[in-house]
Length: 59
Image 1 (cartoon, one colour):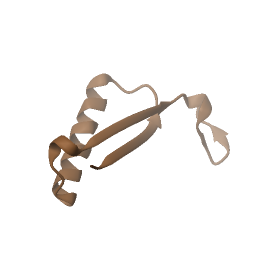
Image 2 (cartoon, helix red, strand yellow; image 1 turned 135 degrees about the vertical axis):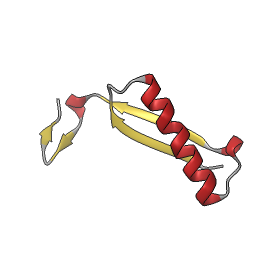
Image 3 (cartoon, one colour; image 1 turned 60 degrees about the vertical axis):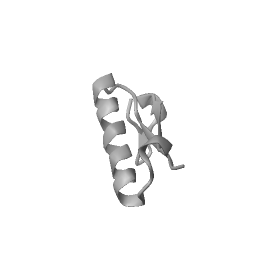
């Protein structure tokens, strides 16, 4: 059972997140030959103030 965790900045629309989950699921299905019903996708949203790039917070 593949469990795929995606960590990203918060703020994307529910529609965009659903589309991403479908695409990630389809990619795992194609590349791993895993049955669709066994693939899990978890999104972890992080506030911009808790995310830094090059030492600089994004929020």
